[in-house]
Image 1 (tube, rainbow, N blue to C red):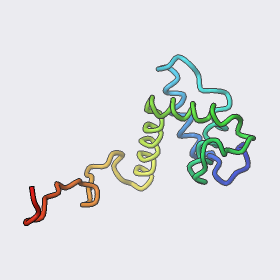
Image 2 (cartoon, one colour; image 1 turned 90 degrees about the horizontal axis):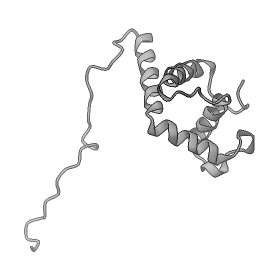
Image 3 (tube, rainbow, N blue to C red; image 1 turned 180 degrees about the vertical axis):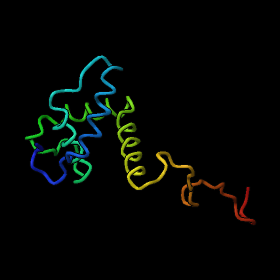
Image 4 (tube, rainbow, N blue to C red; image 1 turned 90 degrees about the vertical axis):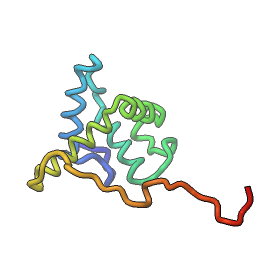
Length: 122
C-alpha cells in the first residue's frame, strides 16, 4: 500500500500508528487525514534518507504539508505516544515488563562543571 520506497511504513508499524491516531481522534475531534499513511511514509523517508523536507520526492505531495503535519504530531505528543506504544509492544513480545524499571545515564550525557586550572588568572 506504500509509495514503493524501502522506507515505507510496514503493515505492522502502521497498526501501531493507526491505533494511536484513532485513539487521539477523540481528543482533537478530527479524524486523521485520509492519506495519513502516505504522510507517515514521507516522514519515514526523511528519517531514513536524511534528506531535507524540500527534497522529498514529488509523489509524496508538497513538502510543506508533510512538514506541517509532522510538526503538529510532534507538538501534540503523537510521535512520543507512537514510540511509547512501540516500546511497550516490543518489551511485551520479549517477555519483559511493559515499562522499563530503570534507566542508565552514561558520563557523556551528564554535564560537568568546568574548573579553571590553577595558576590561571582571575
